[in-house]
Image (cartoon, rainbow, N blue to C red; front, side, top):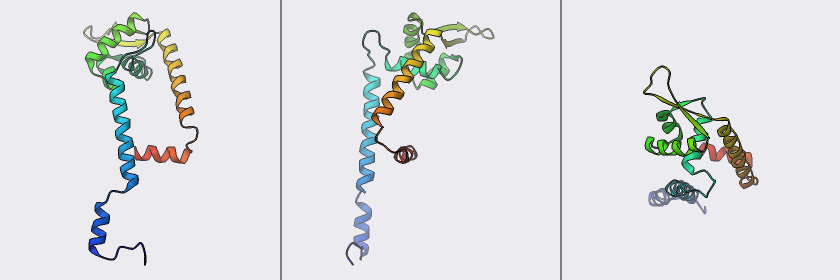
Length: 150
């Protein structure tokens, strides 16, 4: 019978050999993580464009009416120091506003301005269109499988 493992040594050798599909998945996820790290480390933007940290920040603010700087850092998966600098730029551009808590003056809350909501909606639309374009040939079943694996 061809293709069957007959001895314990054959079974042990097969168990130690990596499955090609698993190795391909590992390499793909590793490449994706590396791309994310490169994107974060090169957090520069073209004039008039938002940086990666700024986009992450406004996307996080789009989920809540307001957040503290600490909550925003956690939600956007950024360091608090990065968020503070990011907010300086976003506030200067009129995208976010900072205001002191009425209950505790030590707490600074952040929220999107009307302009910030417009920027966020435009950026989310661009992202959705890009995802749709890049994955148009991938079936829903394959997308669901990818979600389960990831």
